[in-house]
Structure formats: structure tokens, C-alpha cells
Image (cartoon, rainbow, N blue to C red; front, side):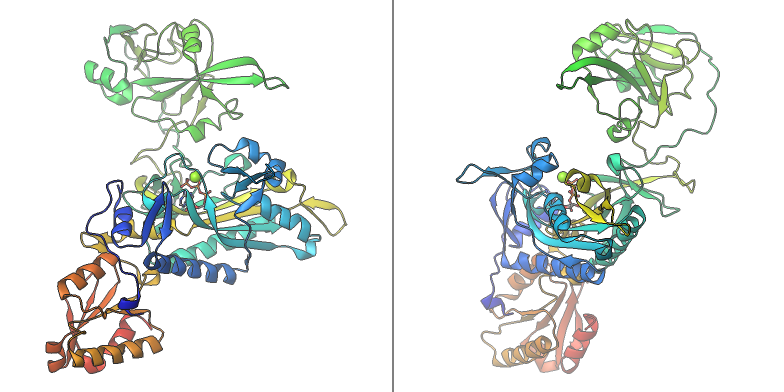
Length: 581
Ligand code: ATP
Ligand code: MG
């Protein structure tokens, strides 16, 4: 490609709404153009990156035995009604109507459609296993589209779906995909981690996220530097503390804490560690009748140490809370505690409720909680002596840096990541809802076992930039750079020797299959260099009249501090070696 034929449209300034480096740099380098909130044009320079991402994904999916197909962006609502998702999914699902007022959705994912294909095509166990994938546009009406392609509303995803005859075979298919994902993310040249993720109601441990490590990532990921343990924050287990509960030492004392409604304020006022305070979270569960009316509600008190945060996914697993909970209303809180939030505690309740203590709270002695009276707390609280043991003890909190690793191999560390892929065992959730069966050896119909596997094709370049940029611009890994190499001949438009040398080398490189762009625009060197550094092409060769006279060109990798002189006669071989071609 020659720069004069291509669209190079860099910007001096990023738009004001671009908060993170990848968004700013993608806009400034002219990779994308905003069309609406969370909706972007993929400009020629940006599309080259996206195509390279797609090709790597496609090659590895094919190698892993998956078959590519394409399912429509616009999908009839009927299939989505079969699984109930047409009604149940929130406003993220874009619903539209055609001229006959028939309902459709714009696909946010494609479990329904692929399951419909499978139930028509797969009749016998002899046809299994099968894995279908597509690289297709998705639409999710995200509440907060932001960070450019990182969280768009329209984006491109690779989504694959495996179909198997039984659980064992489905788990094997899952492992094949998890392995293919490692091959894919290795090829991108990014630092990433595969982390265990919550597999929801299905159970088992078959859910992993692939996270590109970056300080601006939206997800907290937990890992053990001394082992291969890694999980996302939702999933990472906080082990029960080792030691027994100490004996009570202090008497129960009501202390004034005027205006101190948080654990942190109370600890500061009393001059005690935050870890000796306990916070009270009040939840409620509803029992519904057949018509969906609430017949009975149960109020729950969750106790966590003041320095810990509630993990809602873990709370969702507590027996009794696992069918869904909500935060209690002000009226419910008043009826049980006789007090407004801020000064709540488990002592002297007006009505009984269910108490669930975090594993760390149940081993505390002499702790502090609200007195159920505005502007007062109680110190010296002890289980058994001042209140009965809790109804339940559970892991309710997010882990923190330094907690013991669940595998017993050291202390946990936390870093941030960007979720670029997800592999997930689905079981028979969709096949049961849509009656997708096959006939087993005995001729009996069985539900198909499924898995689903996503990669954020358009999120990936954004994640790559978050991890690889400097003050001058993007630094692409070779595998997904819009061009791998740029030739920058100085004054090419005016100097016949430079022009001839540049054209010759350019032709040789093209013939060798190297993804090279020749900047034949005759721009001033400073402008030209700054532009390619912003765009982030990893390899650059500068050719000048002075260099030609002494028989050298100047090579510089985007990460190098200075250029290296290369013998002009050996430049082709040198570049091939550098580019691994
Ligand atoms: P997130 O938690 O980031 O919203 P998700 O759990 O909704 O992601 P999946 O439904 O598993 O994501 O989709 C598969 C992949 O698609 C994700 O791993 C991510 O890389 C990508 N993806 C999801 N939502 C978006 C979005 N709004 N914009 C760009 N890529 C997205
Ligand atoms: Mg999402």
C-alpha cells in the first residue's frame, strides 16, 4: 500500500469525551470515527487491525475443528420467546418491529438461533460433537457505552457454540476451546491471564474469562504469584481464617458516635482498627404465589467486617438467598431495627430475622456495631455472650490483596484486566427450553449439551492499545498492526535516487508478503515520523539522500530510543529477519 492512495487522517487533539488512552489514540490515529453513542465507523486504518484480529481467531477456530457460519443480525422474536429471554432480558436487548408490526431483536448473542439450527440439523449421536461459530455484528444497548470500542453498543464478536451428546463430551469440547483461546491470545502478543469465572446457576467450574492486563481495566482479577491460581473478583474465594475466635475481653458498652454513620468514621472517632468494626447490610427475599404476587417476605441481616466489601455473587449462593434477593425497604428496616441505616446492628432487634455472618466476622471478639439507635454504637460485642451464634456463616466478601490463596500456595495479589474473551459451559439450559434433542444409540431422544465461547473482536484492539502505548501514540504488536512496516523516504517527491531506492525495496517487500506501507506523500520528516508513531506501526525504515550516498538506511522499532544504521544493500534481508518473515 502507498500512503498517497490510503486514507491517513490523524488528529492533533482527541475529543473531550475520550477518557482512556485507547479511545483517545484510536480517534487521534484515525482508526475509528464516532457516528453516535457507542456506534463507530471502522475507518480503513482501523479495519485493517480488526481484520487481522478476525483472521487469527478464524484460523485457530478452524484448527480447533469449529465451523464458521453467519446468523442474521435481525432475528425473529419467536425464538427469543421460546427461551423467555424476549421478555426477561432488560433494555440491553434492542427490540424492533417490521412494517407488519412483527417483533424482532438485533442480536446481542445467538444462543437461540444456533440452538434452532442444531435442533433441525442434528438428529443422531453420530453427528456429534459439533461446534458452530460466527464473526458477526452485535448490538447491546449498554447503559453506559464508553471508552470507544471497549464498551460499544454496536460491536463485533466471535461467538461459538458447541453441541455434545453428554456432559463428559461437552467438557472435552470446552477444554478444546479453552486451549484454542490460549493459542489465539498468545498470537496477539498481549499479556493476558485466563481466570476462573462464576458459572452462575449451572455449577461446575467450567467458566473462564480471558483478561488482558491493563491498569484501566474494568475488572479486578485475583491471582497468586506463587502458583497458577487466578480468578475474577466475583469468583475468588476468601478462605475461613485459621485461628479460633479469641475469648471476650471487654464489657458490652454503648458509646455515643454522633454523626458517624460509617464504619470508617466510627473507627476513626474511637481510635480503633477498621477491622474491629462490623457493618450491617439488610436484604429481603420474597415468596411469590402462582400469580407472581408476594405472599411473604423474609428479612436478612448480612454482617461483614468494616474493611470488607460485599460480593453479591457470593451472597447469591447462600442457601435461602439463592433464589434472588433485594435490598430491604426503609419500612422493613424500621420494623426490624427501629432505626434508620447507619446505626444498625444485630443486638436488641424488634423482630427476629436471619443473620448471615461472613467467615471473618464469626471469628471476631470484642467487635463494634451499630446500637439500633441514632448516633450510638456498641463496643465489646461478643458472639455467644451477647448474641446467639449466627444462623449461617458464609464467604460473603470480596478478597483483598494479601489474603491467603485458596490453593494454599501463598498470598493473593490483585490487578486489573479487560475481558476480551469468555468460555462457558452451558449444559442443557437452551436445549431444554427449545426442545433441541438428538437420538442416542438406543434411539431415545436426549437433550443436547452446550457450551458458548465469545471473543470481543472490536474490543481487542482497544485492549491492545491500553497495554501498548506511550506519550507519542500506539505501539502495535506485529500480529495486529495496521501495517507491520512503514518505509519513510525523505523528500521522495523531489529526489529521484531516493524515489528509485524506495520503490525497489517496496516492491521486494511486497513480493515477500510483508505488510508494508510506503509513505510517498513527500511530507516533512518530523510530521511524517510523528504521524506513524501515533498510528503505532511497529517497524520503520527511513531512507534519505545523505544515507543513500553513504550506503545506509535507518531502522527503528517503535519501542527503540534511537535508530540503527543498516547497510542499504542488506536492508531487505535485515527487515525480513526483524519481521520474522
Ligand atoms: P462485559 O462484562 O464486559 O459486559 P459480557 O460478560 O457481557 O462482557 P459476553 O456476553 O461474554 O460479555 O460477550 C463475549 C465478549 O464480547 C466479551 O468477553 C467482550 O470481549 C465482548 N463484549 C461484550 N460486551 C461488549 C461491548 N459492549 N463492547 C465491546 N465488546 C463487548
Ligand atoms: Mg455485558
